[in-house]
Length: 358
Image (cartoon, rainbow, N blue to C red; front, side):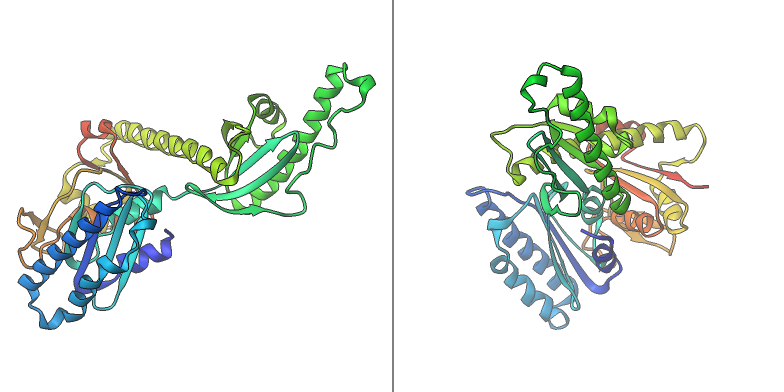
């Protein structure tokens, strides 16, 4: 998910815009349930559309809804599926993150909160496989390898400085110096890639090799950490699986730090917890950081450009199924930060909290 696609979907307008989200399964036979769930959600969307708009003006949307269950290949599902459908647009996005619940939302704009979560948690990074037998560098996104980096430095062949001189094998200091020299060259090559891409790195290595790498590293902060190498599971797809676990843990730590920073900001009077105040700050461009518990959503009916009433019945004409989605996009589009989390610590402040810029 990139900002261009997110923007295209978030800024699309139509009456109606249909957003369908459902949790899915990666493996058989569980993914058979996905086809059933999708068919049921499409039927639910069709009923709501017919009730509100009749059939004539939305014939194309109804036709597309009927085709969806047979067009989507459930054998390549990830953890959730998101469909955006209007008279002018049809987009299907598979996500490696679950959604709070299966849902159908119908409004004049698409519900993009789950896409914002995908956008925020999608991470491109480097994976360095490090051993004395050679060094490879990969560019990865989430839990998939995008490509092996091949340039004037990478890949490194077997350490040319490795001490093979029989008469000197007992010289531990010489051996250590040779290893450090090799790792110093690897680090400098990686720093060059980092300077060109601004990507940080996870290292697949033994604890000893990683420790030595950190001792010679010019920019130790560009390294996320290391995963202990498993020589029985060192194919690229296995390596990135280990790396992604570390990145996910790091993302959790970032969210925890953001929650703690939000707590500290309360004393300054810059934190809003009232949904109406949050909405107005977001559309005014005053939002710095928005944190939302993933279970929280709120249907509303706009009473003016800046105010709304809470409602329970989303079938009311012109209802917004979830104003949180609208708020989240306002924050992102105005260069603020949005965090969706299941961490219960946020509920001490409220299910939705906003730190303002001024």
